[in-house]
Length: 248
Length: 220
Image 1 (cartoon, one colour):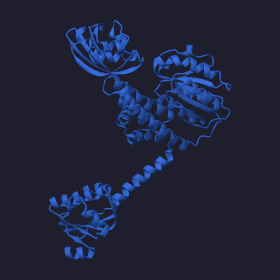
Image 2 (cartoon, one colour):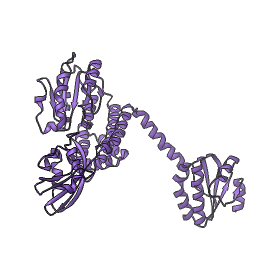
Image 3 (cartoon, one colour):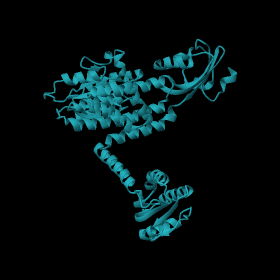
Image 4 (cartoon, helix red, strand yellow):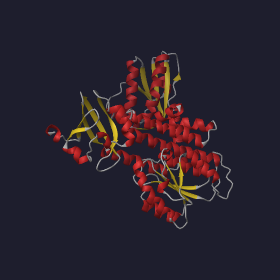
């Protein structure tokens, strides 16, 4: 008894019939101790106890509903280690740790009760449409046997590049191109994340042995490109016709 | 049951869209609400209970599944009401779980069966103290008050709830439900007037038989 008396968690030693042989002070603080450990287990958890923890000569851990002094229906984490005819058991209270999760779930429930599902459906439709628009905002156009044009439309953000980079890389590789011309004439605003992702795409193309060029950069674009963490080492051309002549 | 198991996995993953696809396919195939609630949703949640029993998941996982299922049921009702456009029958019902009771999905499905039957419903959800119920019922004057519990220990709350609510001036019907009613007898907690309904099929039967004065054209 003295060895486990000061265990910082509820601790029990039980025999093969689940009779309690010894317990810690914390056990007595947490439970109304009875002779048999099974009496502390909620009736609907007894089957789980039998199958998971009741087998002798094994280690097991899992959740169990138990009767504590605070609640007749408390959730605990149980760890057991059987050594010959004695089971060493530690019970960790879990309810307070789940309280935060439960409060989040409750907030979701209340939020759902107030949600206008018609508006939610419209929002989902808009998001789907936006995804499709971004897919269409980065077409890959074959110009010559060795050059392709990728005009970008809309704002240059992370989503625009991430949604399209795989397709651009795959087509660049499969088409046997040498030059990829990115046209920025249709681009509005930049975001820092968008620029970083675009720079990564350019570098990947360069690693693949291709020569990317950038056309139609406006002064506000240049500001973002210059302040980017990694510099672009590509030709900047001011019009598509120049790029086209160069390519031919 | 297989579809129920498939649904349970999506609920545990918190994958609302995949879960909705399963429900929506059944709805489009002409399955009625009782089938959707009993054979799909209830079976999925029972399977989740089984996974906890067998130590495959934790209570935290169950919370996520419940939250996802809540959304799924709301979306299903919204879709169903849009399809049905059920006329109001001029009756009101409120729904609540007794104090400390957190399991509310069965109650929610019952309330949705009432809504589909043209009842005006107010869903108060889990853990509603008696004082609050009384005040809400006095103000709103429902024709029926549906009370749910799932934990045996919470059955002790039934008697005061039933006693107090049956005393309300407009004499609402008090209906008690919950998964344990299928296993045990709880009528001693109520009066001769109290209705104890074992499952959703019982709810639908009661709705079909209930004299609401307007012939319902609703097909579940």
